[in-house]
Length: 227
Image (cartoon, one colour):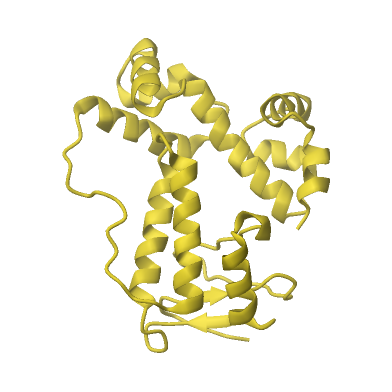
């Protein structure tokens, strides 16, 4: 058992039995990656690095801890922002994270631009993304999101399509499907429970929406991607 009260990276390789116990005031993330999501080089480095064991990294024991923490912040930002090329950015950040974890090569990170001032419409689009992240699991309409932002539904649709490259409904569905995929891959929750957690009150409606999105039922998806 390992106990910590400070910032920590715990790398647990596949097939290693593990569990976590978190205090109620804990702030942090648990990231799970299917091996298929990593390129062959990253998989080989992870296998060599882990050697079948969990590895603990803290600021006191890891000379490249700050870059790891910075990459993780970038991952969180990219995950919560439904922007153009989001999937590609997430993939590159994940590969970079594993390079740092397994090789420890410190270098200056400047992955995302911090300096550009946002237009009013870009700020509204970002606010919409934050609302989706916070409320995707509730039965909320596009009109509800527009009201929360203090704008009209047509205006929200326009800025969503122009700036984020998709309709509001598609973005909401996208976030719900991300949660559904995560739960199907990494938990044993019943599909009816997953439907509720992903924002669908009725399992049959969730099944239809999931099949339209993925071309297969949640049950088939789970069998294919079972961890």
